[in-house]
Every structure is written in C-alpha cells, then in structure tokens.
Length: 123
Image (tube, rainbow, N blue to C red):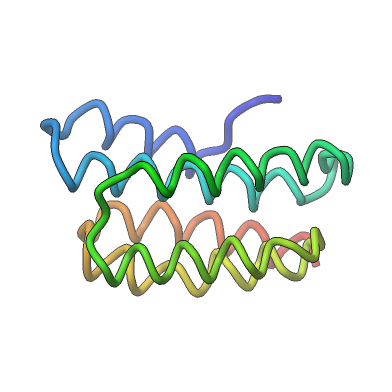
C-alpha cells in the first residue's frame, strides 16, 4: 500500500525529532493514522487484516511512553476503529487533531487535519 501525505509528513516529523516522548508520541500517532486511513476507499484493508492491525496497535501503544492526554486520545481512537468503517476512520482522524496539536505541536496536527479532510471526502 502506498503511503498517504499525512503518513509521509508524520514519518518526516518522527525522523526529525530526537529520541524521547515526543518522538514516541509521533510514532504512536502515525500508527493510528495509518490504521484509520487503511479503512478508506479506494482499497480498504480486509476485516481480518484490520483486526490484526488493531491487535498489533494495542500491543505497540502499550509499550510506548506517551503523555497522558495523547495516550487517552489514542486509546479512544483504537476503540472507535473496532467498527472498521470509513465513518469511524473519519471520526477518529478528526478527533485526533486537537490532542495532536496540544501534545505534539502544530505540524503533527496539520498532518492529521489533512488525513481527516481526505477521509471526509471518501464518505
């Protein structure tokens, strides 16, 4: 699967940030954005692959040192993604913008905003 503009921006931010909580937060955000965007047309992942991704996501998020507001937002996002619908993906992406801005900064929030806007176009 090709990466999206939001994913590419987050990967760049991860690469530019020093080791530590901000980098781990960006990585966690990228994982959730990737899982959400994978539900969108034109080629959404299968339900089986999505379930696998969510299991891996839960394991991975549990091992990262994340600031509490981001940890809560990502856990809620993961729960919403259980439904595996494009609507859930769009909702998750729009709800992650504010915590991304508060914890990780404007550039991370902008990447999520782009993803949310793109997701809404698919609904």
